[in-house]
Length: 224
Image (tube, rainbow, N blue to C red; front, top):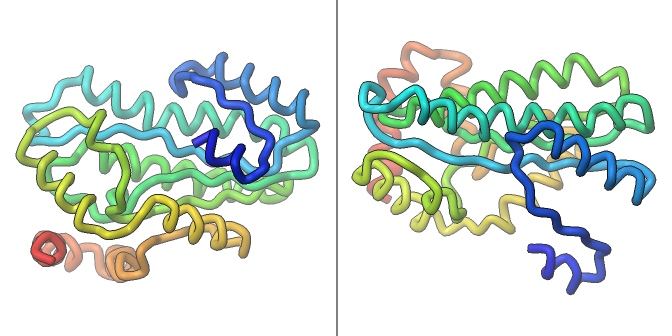
């Protein structure tokens, strides 16, 4: 990824790190701010998945998912907000998932962690808007990523998810472009592709009906 930015003429510094290490994230952001003079945009996208029946999952597996998907985002937000809130503000994009809304079966840990990222992002929107910090939460549906490579759990569920990812026909670059455009327009919530917005609206307006319809909606999507 760094090489592609360099080819486009950008100044890039790539550093390997672990989003679970709050001190390391603080040090990385502090170093970047000292070198570049500030921070305008932060995109937090690290994530892992756990698939399979809830009763077959372990506390350790849930800890792994939440340490990366939620605590990693919180660590990164904390590190950049310290600078944005006392400077000229900035934009934070937290990448959750439509899974935080369409909470389907056999993905309880992943769904819960992504729902928590949505809640965290909405809380930060309220808390730091007066400091000039804009927070956008992205809730994309299936698109081509490497999520399955690090995923753990039930093979059948992972294979079904891998099929949906591959058949989506949507590249990560397309999602990133639309996400940045939405954030640039001041959008607080980004759902992509647009067809998933129906799920989001239905969940908010008629949650009980949505729970009844969700299995059929997901089955139709899998059959496409």
